[in-house]
Length: 318
Length: 298
Image (tube, rainbow over all chains, first blue to last red; front, side, top):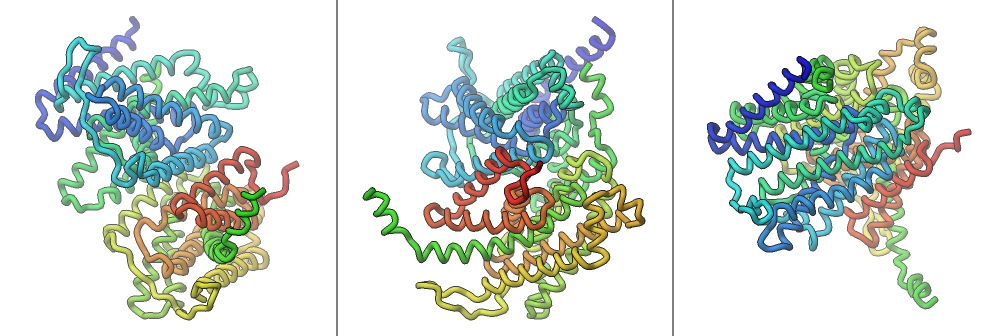
């Protein structure tokens, strides 16, 4: 183990330990809050694969997130008693199918055209979900019961906020490690070379389009996973989560936290949600928190384009 | 063949004509919104996410002036001017520092602006929508409908504004500067054209046009803090379908897309008819990414 690795893994263990202990010491509200940060962080992290590593800004991640939610909802409503793993499989299948569809069309385009296409695709799914009332519950969405945490018949225990937190933490940490490994693999290197210079990557002989499609699908799957977790935490699926404002917030999390770091988006989500909570407490529930947050966001793009974790970007990716 | 014959016998020809008129009216407003957007993109490489909010802001300023003075025309004028000034200020403060950076930064910044403006409107004016009274209330008979003259007036006024803008681009000094900067930024600067000023001016003009269309459109639907969202999406579609930065193409695409949506809403409900324009956009991007209404690139 090199020195860098030692420090990295020590830091990783410390953060994990803190997050594991957190629900034991935090009051109920903050427990839920921390879980929510992790879930939004996972969504933002999934979009970092595209923004930070492949150089494609997706404005359509709400579609993957939302389909994950509705997929989980389908599994939880159809099968009785509700099964956690089936919900995850359904959610991933939903998000994966949509991701394949979106990827096939949108990866032929670059830069802002890619951003606009993904945005439009997410709006298509929004309109479908919003107007297909018989299937999706329309504007009201779907509500369902939370499944129990079970391991293939070994044991089964109902979720409370602490066990849910640990479960979400386990999923997010595993996703982070998997994504980090993928981004360091030859496949990840090709994605980063597409970001740096697409024509040259093509000239070397890599089928750029195929790599992009796989990148979008990978990103969509993890976004769908975040959607499943959110559905399990909140016990509902609503079309608001497919609306493009969610995609916009995902991009904001990324930019605030620092793109191309995987961890940055989680930090960004935490920063954003904490600020929002703080503003809400200081000035009351009615306070339009997005106004000051918008100013902070704009100031960060102009003065701190690397984001909060940008300074550690190379170090985290080594 | 029976099915075909039946289709033509039951085909709602009167509705088709009504929807054609509707489509052209909304198309003209959309053209007004989109021409500002396409101008800003063509010259500055800025995808202005806040364009819908400038549209909404124009409508709100219109409401305030209407309440104060009662004159629709004054409201139209003041709203255009105010929002143009706001646009100029926004450009100087937020977009000027980003010149020379990745154009994606400008998407993010304008997205931030749109969040701020939208929430400001919600905070200041509340969620209930406001109403602007139409300046003329007379109707004419179109089949079984009493069709308001005001809608026809909107289309005509939009055409006048776009026409005036075209003349401005063609003959005025500032217009020549704008066209020169679009063609070649560096060369324009070398010839002594104040490019930063042109940028600010273009953003102000685009914002003003969005505001004008906001005031014109407000009597039809009411003023609401979310009214910009639908329009910015539609305007994006139009700008891409028409060919980014191509003014004539945007106008043609605006009318084309609006007509298609109007026709689709004969059969499905209007919120689903939006999908038609989405599909048009995706097909355009796949088969003619440079835009439908531009000559084939050699």
